[in-house]
Image (cartoon, rainbow, N blue to C red; front, side):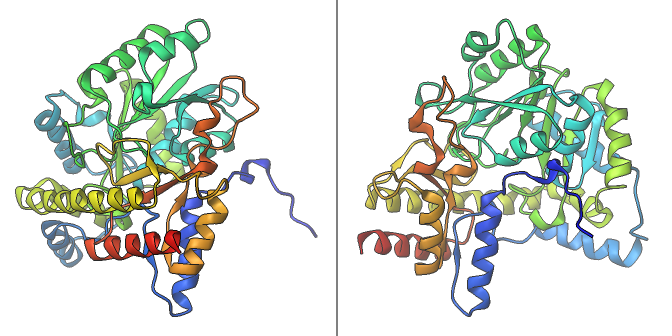
Length: 398
């Protein structure tokens, strides 16, 4: 008997994960792999978090929690918003999720009907598009270039959507793959536009804490009618602990709670108990040391890209990525990245992940076609980033 397949499963791959899979195969063959493809810190969780996890293993049951997460963690996150942004966030509007990915899925299900239009930037994180597509939503790309620093603007939204606003808009600051940051004024203007047009704004803030220029603004500073997504994976260096959160409008809390209870039961309990210590002063000192290393790695990557005459199209204000135009080397970065990995052990992510070709669209800028670009992550150790970049330069120069 053949299994009937749903079209919901026919999503595009997340190519960063495909490259990781290929890299793991290369490593199994006994070769060294230098991963410049994933947004994954090479460091462990902060020492106070690991110590708290050990204590919890000795003293706690580690059973299920409420679907929304344990109250002490939600209260500590609310205090973080007050301390960091001056925002008054009710702990009861915070839900703890199995990574930020689970937050996006539950929110998409709770807020949008199949057929609703949700807008996102191009280039932008592919899992938004792929997950929304699997849920039957219509995803529209907003081409963002240097005139808006690779971010959307209220003026751009007004020009395109004044008379047909989307049900939702997803923004990210710092952005993946470009690393650009929206200023407080820019984020405020976008928030007010969404308020005026009945569009739900979902602000992806998972890279907050990793910035090299100005501090990051949060949507919670400007409105409580929209959504902020946070994560312990990036700044807090807890990727495999699978823990994220969302700050929700009151009316979405119960629907999201019901979905989380059915989809995930609860986020990992041990991770929740330990994550309270991620906000401790000792943790912050340790984590800010990681950001200093990212700053060093960022310059190593920029220098390497300049050495191969690649054009870095965004200033990488935050996060740990450079997004670069390598169209002088290839017009198919997916194939090129695979060849680079096999030849050198260096893994980079093809830009087609973040800016799929939509050359048939009337409003598409062909210069933003992701097949011309690569994303290079500098989240790893300085030694690995430096060696990986040296191999990349040597490969291109022949």
